[in-house]
Structure formats: structure tokens, C-alpha cells
Picture 1 (tube, helix red, strand yellow):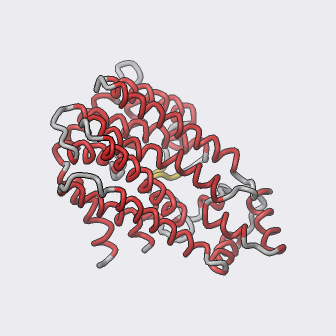
Picture 2: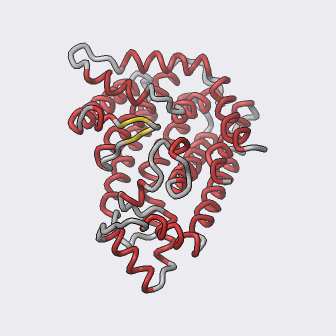
Length: 333
């Protein structure tokens, strides 16, 4: 099977199956990102939301709700909520990381300014809480509110762990479970809760989203050292230049000899990066097999996501979620 078969078709099948719901989600997003008094808000929001993102997280909410037999209207509100939370975090992340490219386009903070990105992100967080209350389900509200707090906590943890060569794989897992997997697992879990699914199915949806999100972030971190700008939507090596300790680097540091550790200290802890350093870092990661080890771990998490689906009803959407786990890691298989 080609990469195109693996990566594009599962996602497209899910999008096609949920087309009517996604159309409603997109209409709701356009309506709720409007602002009568501050036109900068829809300008900045539209730049990111309409940039061709996969809408993966809201589709997870829709799929989980439909899979569990939900027939009401509020899965659309929760899917839009999830997308607003995600977009808000992207706006804030690009300011923190001083990023210049997102989804292959200039970032909002580059086109406007940091103040606009932060404040519009705050607006979208507020809008997301307005939306989630409309489902009138306290448990759903609790899940999404907790996820928002965990996401922020994960970002702060990443900030404090950055440039610290003592960062362990356990801390890395905690970071990505917060900054990425928390929204995946909340997106799937609230779909089951909204549908009134049995507790074993709600737990299965949480576990699926958690494992899928971890696999997703590991692949993103791996692609930073081997993907193309077209695939990853940013410049290859950005994580290295931003001195982020992602899994391939953490593994390489753990296996480094004295000379190699001195290199990592210079480029990561001290930020003294020179021409050729990225290539040398890649050579060290290849030498110790840390890129391959990260790939193996991402595939294992995707396998765990598929296994989590076992208690869920036999339904075409369940098969699509199974395929989606392959889609997430297809770029590195």
C-alpha cells in the first residue's frame, strides 16, 4: 500500500462519512468566530481555521458520538468547541515559539502581531466555553474544562523542561500527553458521554484518543528531523533551532559519550548553534538509532489506540477510527 493510500484515504473516508455534520460544524465556527466590535478577531481566526487543517479533533468528537448512537444536535457544538480550543492553543504556541510558519503559511503573529494572536486566542477560549455549556451536560463541561487546564499545564511543563538535558522520556510523555493527547482524548470521550454510552465504551474512547494523540505528537516530533515542509507545515529542523528536547534528542542525549554530550550542551542548553550543527545532530541520532526508536514507539502507541476500540459497537465508523490510527503514523512507516 502506498503512502497516499495509507495516509489520505482513511482520513478522507471519515470526512466523507461525517460530511453533513462537518458542514454544520464549519458553519457554527464561522458564526461564533464573528465579532461585531473587533474585526481583527475573525480576520486572525479565519487565517488559521481556513488554512486547510485536517479538522481531525472535531471529527473525532463527531465520530465518537455517532458511533455510540447519538442522534441529537449537540455533538456539533462540542466538535466546534474542540476546534476552538485547538485553534486558541495554536495561536498562543506560535507566539511562545516565535514561529513564522504554520500549515505552510505565515503565522498570525507574523502577519499581525503577538498581541493580536494572544488576545484572539483568549477570545476563542472564551467562545469555546460558551459553546460547551450549550450541551447542558455537566460531565461534558468538566471533561473539556479539565482538558483545557491540562493543555496549559503541558505547555508550561514543556517551557520549564526546555533546554534541560536532564529531561527524561517520562517528562516528555507527560508533556505531550498534556499539550496534545489531552484534547484528543477529551474529543473522543465527550462524544461517548453525550451519547450516554456505557462506561466501558466511554473509557475505551478516552483510551483511544489518548494513545492516538501520543502517536500523533511523536510522529510530528520525528518528522521535524526528517519530513518535508509540505508534509509538516513548517520548516524542517525548527524544533532543533528552538532547542526543544523531543524524544529523538532525549534518546540521543541518554546514549551520548562525553564528546557528544558536550555537543548537545552547546546547541541545546547554551543555544550556541553553528552551520552544520543540525546535520551533526541528525548524524548522532542515526548513529544511536533514536529516530528509528521513536518511529517504533509511535507505531506502538497507534497499535494501542486500535486495541482500545475493542469494546465499542460494530459500526463502519469504528473501522474508520481503526484506519485513522494508521493514518497518523503512515508518514513514518
